[in-house]
Image (cartoon, rainbow, N blue to C red):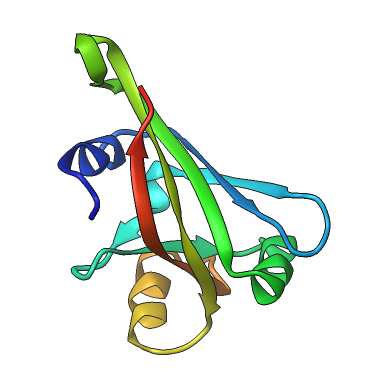
Length: 124
């Protein structure tokens, strides 16, 4: 599901915007490419220390969108820079093997945002 170019983007630093919405307006929170871990079954794991509004929204509506990119990866038409919009479902986890592995890597986290992608669209 996740294309190779997506993994190339993750090898370079860039900002990640995560959009959630409950019953009211959309909410945006940011993180970094280097904080994203993709599991062998292509679940996207992101350390969460804050993200309280995002968690509240996900508990009401588990649909999520995420935008990320890097100017270091060549995109369409050999232009410098590319990005992706990921759509999927999300949940927060606070225990288990994925949580433990993420906690070892990112000591600051209190929970892990887990995203299961349903689409990955290259935008640039």
